[in-house]
Amino acid sequence: MTIESIEIKPEFQKYNIKNPIPLYVADFLETYKDYSLDLGTGTKFHITIDRLYPREKINPILKLAHEDDAKEIAQICEEVYEGTYPYKEIENEEAIKEMIKSPQHQFILFKLKNSKNAGCFRFSLDFDNKKGYMGGFMVRKKYQGRLDVVKAIMGSFIWIWGKYQNKILVWYCENRTAHASSQYITAVCGVHTVAIFPNKDIFFNEIESDVMGVIYAKNALYELRKKAIPSIINEVEEIYNYVDKIYSLGNVSIESHKIELDINKITQLFSSFRREKNQNNFGYTRITYSLASSKSYFSFIHSKHIQNIEKIKYHINDLEELYLFLQELYKYIVAHNIRYCEIFASAYRPDIQQLFYEMGFIPRGYVPCWEYNKNTNEFEDFVVFNYFKGELSNIDLLPEGMRLLKCIKF
Image (cartoon, rainbow, N blue to C red; front, side):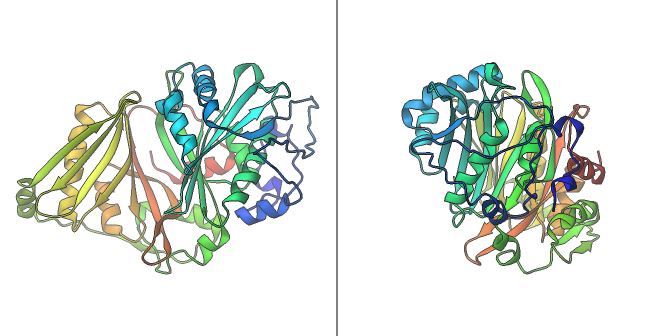
């Protein structure tokens, strides 16, 4: 795969990165194996990038953050997003300090020669599920356009992907679509768009959409991926074909699934329905639905400041239980004027996919190897469903994202 294959827009032609686009983490690390980065003491990524419009940019020193950097990281977030960053814990010094102390989080600072911090990048690591999140890339306003963000991001990836290449096998991010710059920079590192989250976030008091990007360790896709053939509903087929062209996933079964529910059973289940609510100091409310008659549950996080619902987790014995939970979710969406809701369904459960679809959730992504099953030592594919209110906000996508957009029904 070459740089031309992602069809560079004119505004990105100023970056001429001559190395081929990697498909897997190991490909990326092999390309830059001669670059040794020590983020403990601080280091620069000294790659040469030819630019169509030559201009001297600041090559930052990449350095791991320590607990005493927490206050400044919160200040950077507050400054860059003018207090509108959706994830309020990143504006809080104590919350950041706790993250830095934990092995599940890494913050990389972009420092200048005078030791001032020009920006930062955050990584969250889920070792149990072999999955890592890349987010919170921020550059202070006075250094935007002056800091070499390509070197900052690529250098960060070289270090973090290299350090955890045997522990984290799936990396993902959510890129803003108000502009395509971050999509481009991650794309040249091998991160591919696999899902669209319409109107998910609010930045600078404006509704914005996001795209989900992923990159894999090769063995996750071709050794540890579940051997069973995915079974998807008709509405997911075009999206699956789009992702299949990237990763050569193989055969898939297309199901036309008819939902038949036992209404009497649903009525009986309702008598044992329970609801639990837990709220924290950052504007998040965890709602959990459960049943006294079984171990089934359905939980989600409501972010009040942006009126969305995500991080849905559920365990059910049958579709009647799921239907009851989804009915209660729908009531919650209406009562709290929710703008956006996101839910993932197993790619091997067409019945669940069909129920989500009939309940108003539309498939807008397909993520190979999204969940790791410790018992079977396998990764399982999932389908992304979401609901959103209003008109689709203006989104700027790379051609790859535009191809996915054409596969999705709005």
